Image 1 (cartoon, helix red, strand yellow):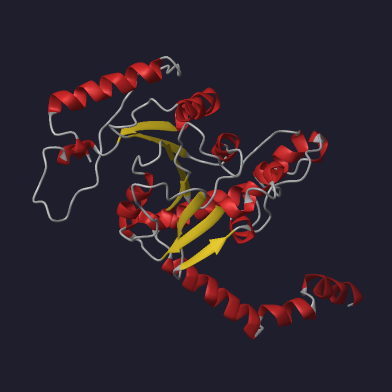
Image 2 (cartoon, rainbow, N blue to C red):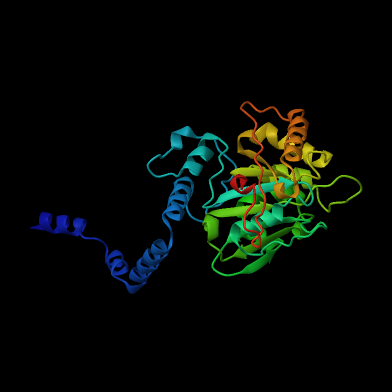
Length: 308
């Protein structure tokens, strides 16, 4: 009889655990999680699950790595924790695709973002408008974040940008849009300052910061306009440095293609840009420079429509 009672006590869960399992708080939390999952699209759930394989939610970047292979627990630890114990460097993917756009001043970077999300989130003009780094992402409500608030939202950048504090604070901003056009809810754009030569002064080392942020991006778009082409030394220096470490992420485009009236002139521009790039980068595969332009709603069509 005593043996049976001990067995029953061993199998029975603690009273506190039973009360929590049946508590309204847990049921409410499970219902909230189920509602959030139902609101996510299939692609959003895929990106969320991939991110969850690397680290626990809210874990952020790992601490200083400690080489201790004997302490590995593959069935329990996430990939970031395993890499930390092995002394390996690992960057966990975000829940959104990060796309950084680089180019000359007035190359169409901000206009491309506005077109993509179908909302005027970035200021565009002939003058230099984007003088800092602007993060354009999707959220539940339209808002603008400045300085340190941007770093709180993109905590994974803090480690690589801490060497530029505090000069970088005024140059960081975030534009949160409610748009879900063209799967914008799966993308975060990083609009970089327009690069120019001459005596123009940036309040921070813009080239070094672009290279530092590139570690956390999935794609790097480089836009060349028909006027500036690949003639800006500062732009070419940045491209050369990015190509050394992130060549597979980089994509090159000729923007504002509709401003070139003749096909013959457009081909000349593409050849000139390609020649200048070939002296700076060493692609292992075929080089591509597709043309794009922002369509005018008032026009009925364009001969460049297939290039968009």
